[in-house]
Image (cartoon, rainbow, N blue to C red; front, top):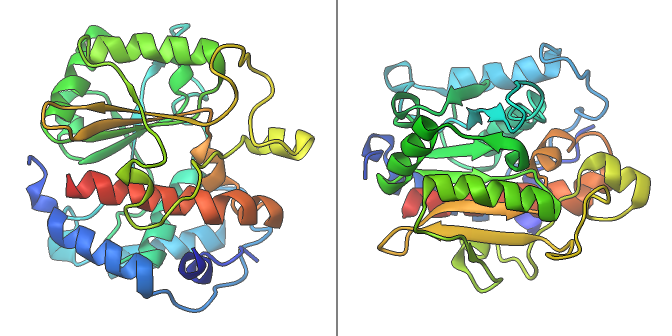
Length: 296
């Protein structure tokens, strides 16, 4: 992780067009060995989307893109969905805009990936999903999928796409998401992932499964899990699950009892949170996940 610390300074089949194999090689080499000097000055920045530091970062990314290949870049695509109570709100877009903006800039900064700046929210439709090899779902414990959305996600993943599921806690939210997962894959159950799974060792070597707490709960309790939920059956440890295709390619990574979005969004709010969660877990694990998704 020491190489990543150098770059992550404390803030003061269907998708072949993306050049997947080349991107992965660049990502692996760059993530391991090509970090530059520390960058300062982001602590205490304004929290508005249009603050000058964030806009400067996005402009730097935009200028780095070849105009002839602006579509052949990685985008951090976030799924829009309705909640279990039928409403729209701060669920699918939890932690935006800064989680997404920090992710794309950190990937641009720490790897050789060409990355699309800005936000990329997408609907769960066959048309939208087909544009992205990797998609992200936040607030998974409240997602409510229609039959059409479940069918679109099933086709997307069986066709080579990868879904990362995040930001939900406790027994009840697990039961709710598990029911939604059955809508997508009625005959493919989530399988527990242990530390020996390759996704924990693609680029960065984890000695324990990462757990990133919601920032407010960490500030109030010092614990690495959200204390508001019931853990009587599954306990409050991090739980990772995968859903696989017939060739044993993981199509969906489920990060239960975790809040990666906060690890990305709040990296600049507190040095302790950054040093304990964002730097050693949030970004390295994301790089591992992307390396897996783009090479399988």
